[in-house]
Image (cartoon, rainbow, N blue to C red; front, side, top):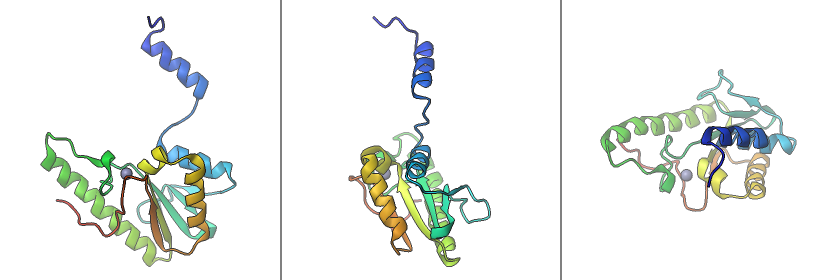
Length: 159
Ligand SMILES: [Zn+2]
């Protein structure tokens, strides 16, 4: 028998963990703990990137797989009801995302998209390793996804 009310339990959990489990927060904390310093949500840059590593000229976006319609990702499945509405709405997000990447690259920034499925499915070590490799590399744009998903850039846009 559950002797603690749901409300009370969530208060207890919050007290114990005190941890924000949103994908963006996980990436922020992981990078910060390993010595990376960044700026958040620079509004002067296209798309207002979630994190910016100025010295590396790198903008990082943390994308929810559903809202950004991560290609071939099981977390991105459209609801069966109002599918057409969602297809149009989210198709706009996909087009905007792609435009933002192009604008950033055109002004000399490198761009990394970390998908929610990577944060959920890769170990923290693996995730850190992938990001670190990207930071130190020379690729202009790239993405990190969980094993089940494929690349988003260059995919056909729905809607
Ligand atoms: Zn995904």
